Length: 609
Image (cartoon, rainbow, N blue to C red; front, side, top):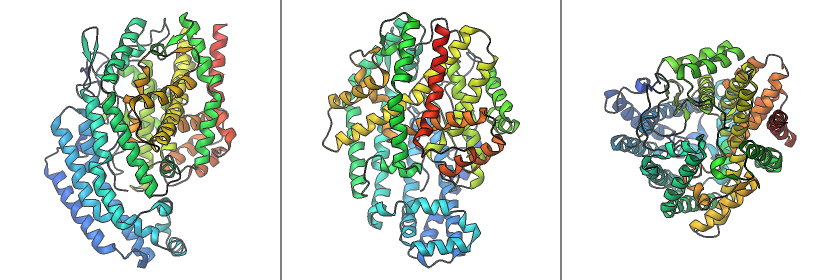
């Protein structure tokens, strides 16, 4: 349960567009965590962490089953304090590293901090093991006798769900120690390899972020050149990426086998506090909807583009007359903040400090990780948001998305370090809702039919990427891990699995250029967080249903919404959705969200008629 800094992001060098192109883009001020990597503040915390871990183990090892309710409460509160210190250190080290992954000092500092914290916290492995060895009746008695302790019931319940999959104390300690040179080391190899990759396009040397950006260029020839440059480099490095994938999949299979996990996905479901049958219902609903969603939309897009078939470099192509690029940063901020304020002034008030206090790093800079994320750090500091802002409508939506995460994390911080973390299946709720608020405001204000078409089409594409694309990724992982359990996979075998999923999800309108079969190599979620991806589809489907309730005028919706976000990880998804009359365990629930996407495609078809 000790926090580390592991985000599903890629790291690459890039050109600097911090200022000038889109206005004065903000950068992080990490002083709220630590003023420097060598100062007395972080040195003091490292010493305090080491001391706290030693004294915690000395005071509580082999003693948990004899504690009173007051004693167990004090024990958990001390454990929470340890989480806070370790989380603060690793958040600082990780955020510094992601600002410039090509800086060897930052990489070394993060690795050293992770190694030290792993060493310090090894004596704490007993905590979850001994909690799980306490009799159910005794735990229940303690919880019922102490109202302050009872608020930690969700933490204890989630820990005890691992009881059937728990190994011996020695084995758990070994896995804890070994993680630094196991999965974490392979993750770092993947990140640093990606950071070093360069792509030659028209005699220009680009990083991955810049090259992927070419796939949404208005010029079809440039999109094709970008695709072929990616294919060339992925093919040159496929042996290494295959080795990383094979090793991590095998490591997972070995640990899952020892833990008696019934499927490779089961551990993720446990962590997400979601039932396997709920995920299966989501997956089945999305796959069944492929024809009315992605297949239908891409056929419509081919018609707009005057093409009989689409190439893979046309998937994210902008519409030919779309001029929605070059949105200045200040304008992007106003669009999002106005949408948030219209929903609730409280939401805008929570979001404002991100822009004014150095909580956002927006520019594309040399060595900075591409993509975007919101990292909650620890509950007595505040979140930080990373963007790579390039002035497109999709970047505005990304700002709305990550700011939603930030608002969620600020509200959930009131739960404390152990209860603030939201399962991945619910972690996307506020972010996707923030996107929807922003999109709806932009659509409602737009009177030009062509621009409305662009807005609607872009939103549909984003939703297809979030729902269809991520479920396709999930299916790829399911097939890959099942195949790896039977033996090592060659690059060609992994390629075949990838292509079987792509053809099914994208539809018959696509022609797949030779080399596209290697495009699984750059997706970081497969490396950093196996089976993470379905959480995006879960969150999008949930928010689509939730937004429908909002539009229907559900009474006190805003109040219920903020209560849901403030709950953090203290409640199950059934409890959180009940006030809105929603139930994710009902298979029909997912069709409600998918029908919203389908209705948008209906509207686009009407525009075309």
